[in-house]
Length: 177
Image (cartoon, rainbow, N blue to C red):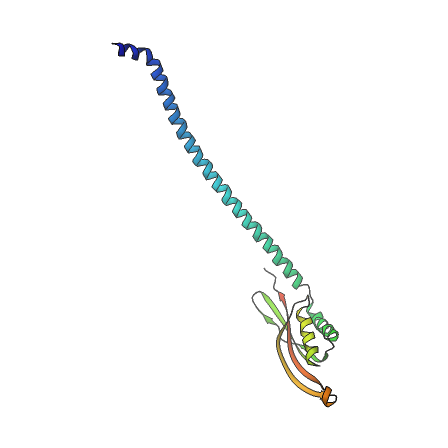
């Protein structure tokens, strides 16, 4: 009997405890659900941040490529012969012959070659090639044939002149459609 009386007295407390336990279970489930949603949102934010970072790198790369294209394409092909002549004069090279060759088209760029025949000694040819390939307007030596021409001077101090046939090229990038 005492047990029944105790249960009657504590009936309201047991109901309160049951409600509290039920509330805790419900709140725990809501928290877990919200935690999953927050984790998913954070993952989406991280993925979007990485995507925007990659897009930023791509945009930066595109700007660099465009700047290089503009830099390379600023030269005028008609002035290339004049530039090559000036470089030869600075290197003390005697140009015997210079003539534009047939252009070569490639998917991304067009190559403009020039055939040259020059007369100089070995060191002057080296200086000429060095100055030509280090020039801001990009030039390439595609072919070089060196032939001895003559030896001048006394036997002990001979200076050898060389006839050199060169094919020098420059490029222009094609514009995208």
